[in-house]
Image 1 (cartoon, one colour):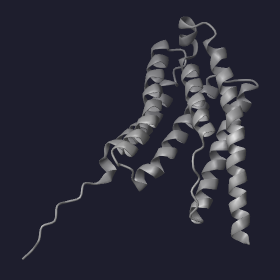
Image 2 (tube, rainbow, N blue to C red; image 1 turned 45 degrees about the vertical axis):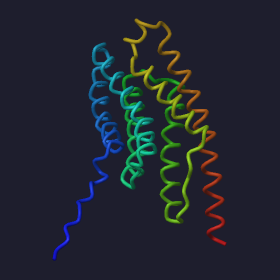
Image 3 (cartoon, one colour; image 1 turned 90 degrees about the horizontal axis):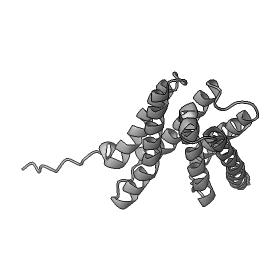
Image 4 (cartoon, rainbow, N blue to C red; image 1 turned 120 degrees about the horizontal axis):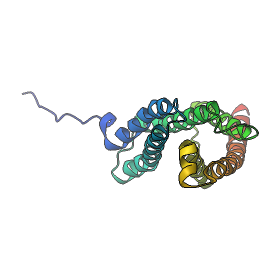
Length: 199
């Protein structure tokens, strides 16, 4: 007698992962819209898409924890989606001159930190060592996303809130400062594990 077992639903299509997929899809959409930096309509649509994507950054984690939808796929894609959204937005804002001059250093610091932490996580994963997200890192992410949202509004935002561009750049520098702190913290923790592994 053959026993028919119920098919297990794939975790790839649970709500938490679908939110993460949405954030990945938002990346090329925001990039495409920023190819027309002087078009105010494109700017506002880019802001709307970016904000929606930023919200899913919180929601996918909340849904995964609350409804037990955590999966290996989600844990892999979540940080990738975050980094792609931030990196692509920074590059487009640098390209259209929204971020320029000395503020380019803030963008460079943020991008370099993302690469450093990604490499560190990959190496520590081989040692079966997890890298927990600190409270300061969460603040950094929040400030960074707000700064980028404000900067994406660009000239269109200036018409609504004079000084919008300056506010965005100030927040970007705050995010860069927090980035340096958290990057150093992660690096120090990583080097400690490397030294312990070699003993």
